[in-house]
Length: 519
Figure (cartoon, rainbow, N blue to C red):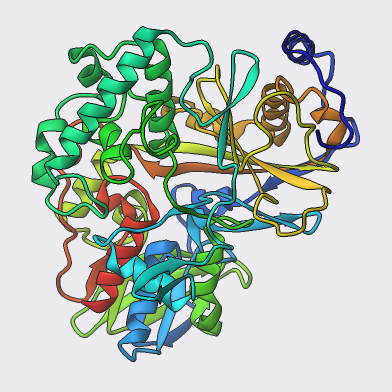
């Protein structure tokens, strides 16, 4: 038991949660908060403003990189490995990292987006080499070993199901023989498709995934009789967690890829306990990695720059960017440019955008994302069932994805304040609402949901900061993968962004950026 909290019964927890849902226990009035993260207003200037002044200053470098997310940082790193140091890395935000940036509340580091990296397999050597460079992966006695401090500490994950916490995210409490049989049969199906070798990270031969790209994951499951409500809830959650959209929207390959490209699917009673793969994580999430890549760049990184125009010239490239701080347009002249921007942005700013880029921009669909960091004065109370884990999910919510605990990796055993990072994927149709609602809307949604398993949460809440992403990640809808164009890398422009992979994960973005920097 934590914090000296009394044991409560399952019924008491449900009653307390219901009281909160009814509005009897709102967040404390003194709770402070606001928006953080992506500068939404800056990005929207591209489509709301047309009267940009002429460039007032011209600067020259060897290579300009537009976009300082994972792909842009990887391209910069690859260029420097080749000895190219005369680089300008431009980004809309004041800090590099894209969706892998971080914040700190009350001195506690917390993610603003991506919060973990599965241990990469041999198909992602570029990512493996990065981890070696950062001292996270070392050869010891002939075997690769990862830094224990970065590996997710136990307990890794739990689910609030039927009024109690259980270990793992696959619903187990009280499920019947029919459900267990469906779990076992789905595991067999995953192993069957894994054996074919088509599923890997990063993706290699996309045409090998064609058999699973013509229908939704939900339709694929229906056709094979996988209709158990608990299995379907779990698989839908996995799709929303990885792609921002449910099984009825994403392609069958994407739903299977979640398992077949990594750790498989382990039903109850399997030799490996639960759905546990080796996961690397840090209090600030994947910002640990992006900050490490950005740290040696110094003035090569130019934040607060809105790229307005990228034009390939006869003898080089021109890049015009709005400097938010000075309120003037800069012109960058370079021999080459790496375009590490989302496709819909790149198609707008690249002059005479090539057909593959225009086609990608028109076809890709992006999911919005909400990340709310809740600063608590103390850890939530531990009750009957599983203790507080790194990843905590509450079943019964169609758009939210639970929360991770920012202090889970802390080596200090003494309890104290913490930050819960709550994620929600409100769905593509709700993009406008996601960006227009006040921060208090998301605070209240998070508090209502999390007060069901944690009735004391409103009284522990100190501050809430909300990050909004209108276009957080591409949605791998049916047909998109096999129709995905190849980046039009010719002349003086190279393209690198996870949009070109059809889905958004660290390994894909990093590999695309690394290869663009080497070409």
